[in-house]
Length: 235
Ligand code: SF4
Image 1 (tube, rainbow, N blue to C red):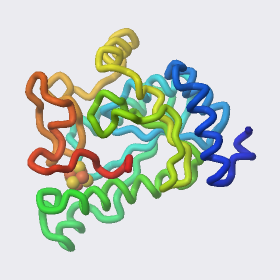
Image 2: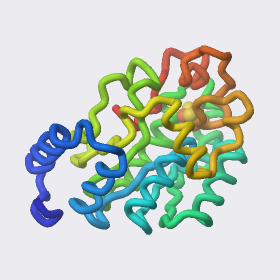
Image 3: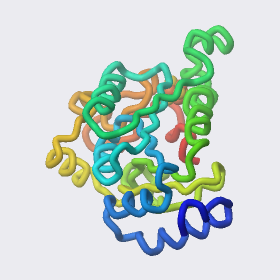
Image 4: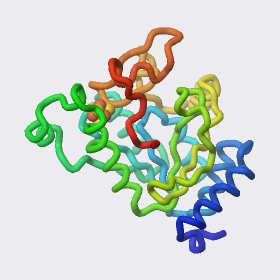
């Protein structure tokens, strides 16, 4: 199928099922290559800048690819610095998406530190809605989820149909281990968020991210004190 042919939900689901079966064991580069060939400029990478290895890989296979970054207003300065370095050094078209409200506007309307009281609502306004808006022009999106990151990600497919958004969702590094990430980063001198060298294993917004102890699940440092483990982008 060409991109012009995949314009309905039913077609996208069938396309995703077929491609997932065929490419389940393919390399990450092959999966991104297939996605570029299939969707052309209607393909985008969503990156938190904690997965710059994914951005590096995507632009190596698909130069000038669009990369969406959700600028929540709560990021560490190191994350914003990483985004700017990536935009400068890599062959990407980096697009920062802002929430509809600034942090000050949200504080005025919902009270300060909503993230401490209702992180689901805060994520809905600062991550989920901006992602929906950012993804709208595209048919398919690439993300950096890996199965070993957490039990909630253990069964992700490399190519899936995202029914909620009516898009194809591509997870080319789903099978990568942390060792494979580290090897790719070292071999390709990938720009990384410096917080990874300071005890952080998974990096999100500053108020909702803490360092993890050795041996702890990488995502244990996210929303510590809440049962929440995902921001809602992948549900
Ligand atoms: Fe708000 Fe925390 Fe979600 Fe960021 S991660 S949007 S600060 S609740």
